[in-house]
Amino acid sequence: MGQVLHHMEGHVATVVLENEGKYNAMSLSMWRELAALVGRLRDDDAVRVLVLRGQGDKAFVSGADISEFDQQRSSTEGVQAYDTAVDQAQSALAAFPRPTLAAISGICFGGGLGLVLSCDLRYCSAGSRFRMPAARLGLGYAWKGMKSLVAALGPMNAAEAFYTARIYDAPQARELGIVQSVHEQVFAHATETAQLIAGNAPLTLRAAKLAMKGLRDEAQADRAAVDAAVKACFASQDYAEGRLAFAEKRAPQFQGK
Image (cartoon, rainbow, N blue to C red):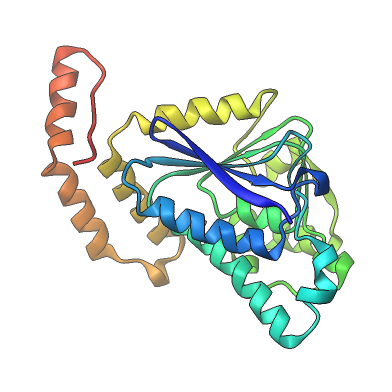
């Protein structure tokens, strides 16, 4: 069935998708667990950065667990329930108020690609492979998932990826914008980057993410909320600490308030 676990290191929460025997294929219960866990982490002020990865190095996520489809995704009601679970997991990541990073090693297909495109920053190993195989399975792809794919890759690249169901290697994925960069030790790079981010001012990061989210989808933009978040930065103790640390030539100690 697989499971979704997490651990904390300082202010970084690492979420691990665990179903290694099936290349971390996502079962229905895992989609639901992921949405619930991300929701809990959202409410935990100790979490300043979230890292998402798969168990082991052979796969990030190979897609949805197809072995469940006859039982879970064959009726109209089942399809709707399954699509809702996937959407809730991806939406929870996309709406997470602090920075999110995807650390990708090995296979990243289907629903796995949808998950990484819901994260702010995406890094992969040299041996990673990416694919949107929906057209090879005969299943329909929901509106939000397609919107995320088009937003990340652009209309023509998204069309090619979806229509052909071809496999892209790591350099091609970087060229398409699926990932920022390729690393031999991707988990170490993601951890180092996450810790670097976590040492910065939390209120500044939240304000920046809120603004970038609005810029990606201006129909949903809340400019008043962005303005309020920016104002909160200048009124914060962290702003005073940042100025003092700069003057004293030391690393700032931010508290998120």
